[in-house]
Image (cartoon, rainbow, N blue to C red; front, side):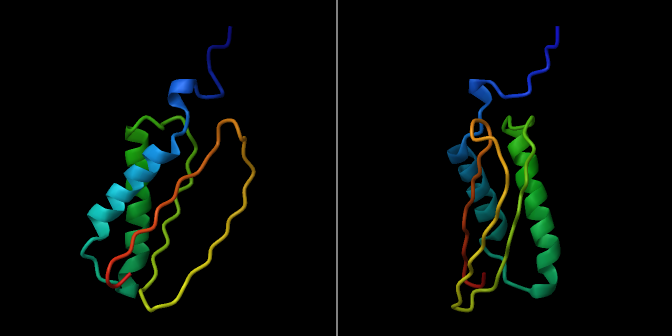
Length: 105
């Protein structure tokens, strides 16, 4: 008998609120006093996305395929609009996001 489950059990469902708290804590910890320096942003975005993904796996979301996108922009009084499209299973797939701002970004 095949014992490999393709879907998470109820106790392992994706919890957007839990993930959002985790993302917010990481962003607050890592970005609170960071100044926007364009040359440093590629490495910072890569590091943040890896940290978020690793922390979520530690929190028990290890059987999920995750897409972590970090976008950093400079505070210049302008707005940003973003959009994304994807195919997913409404029973098991979900998303979470957070916005962090400091003086320069």
